[in-house]
Figure (cartoon, rainbow over the protein chains, first blue to last red):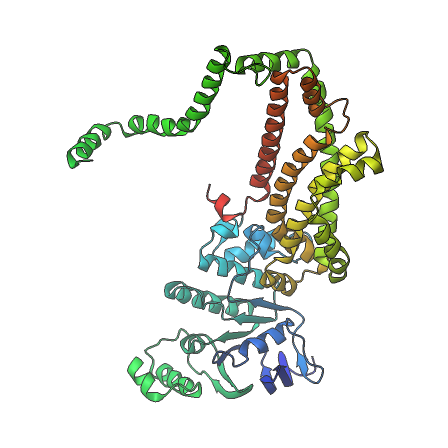
Length: 241
Length: 277
């Protein structure tokens, strides 16, 4: 790589019919950084992630550079129900030693006792941890998380936040999490981007040591700022608090 | 029921709950068989009283005796083997063809355009109505019989497998792609396993259809097979042998279905309804 950007996007425009979802968007991510992408529904955050993942075709006039190894965790675990947990983790991996690698990855997410289980027997949190193991086993240099905890209950989500941070520290992939949960963004990321009208409307560094607490005054201030960036009025915030 | 009665029963049952419960479960299981048994007994009584002539319908005991004789003489096994052979060859051809066409139509747009339209048109034909044409094309030997079974079993397999392939969750396909499966890998690890449950339902339909085809096919100038046994018995007014043939058809159908269900339990062990068991 000629520069030290892990991800570099220049003038990415995506239209669906007359609706411009991404409008000449520029984005750069430092290697090993943890970035959260916030936005209202329909703001194009999932479209951006899907383009980075190679799931949506990149337009010819856009310049997009991502590392060779990219892994995704979706909102739903998307496990193949007819493959055992470890086979889901190794899906698409070539050759020998795959099972041992799967077992190591599953141990890392705390699922070593479930390697031979069918996905249908897993709880929502376990299924999502399997999905994380499936992403990690590929040693991705870019990890894309598309609202991966939105469907989990609050307690499970707290545990998953801690797990993701642990995994990120150990494996140091460049990580981009798409979320509509402001608290989640502030808890996890070094940098929060707000997507609005197809562009990055705000780019805010999060300078707080981890583990972060909701009670921290910096946390509260940042949360308020992000909510107002997202167009939530100040009175609503005060009432909710 | 009054509270008293409930309380009394509860008090009685509580010291040995298991022994108290078991017979009740068994009774309700066997209750289903009481009315068929009564019907058979009435039938036997009516036959013995001379109310049902053996030319109309033989007595159950006569049927059992004839069945035993036919087994001992080796006649029933011989005809059974011939019939089984016809169904096996017909099914092998029909299921293979149906599955192959479903794969072609399911996995490519071009394949769908070429294959699906004619298949959808042909399936509206009652295939048993093709018997006269088959006799003209294939004569009266084994070929038209096997061809009829094959035709009857190909369509259910085609229709269900095609629908299964097209019904694959696109989100799983996307996940497969992201995690590095190429087209062949997607077909093998995502599409085919996803389509298997529906394909197996089709296979069960195909088996039912195959037996039906066999019954019709064996009316065409057969010289062996269960159908021949039945037709031959008709000429001699042997209603007992006719009923034996019918029972054999029924047993064959049942056991084939049980076979597919046993395979389903193994192949679809991942399904939530089966996982818990």
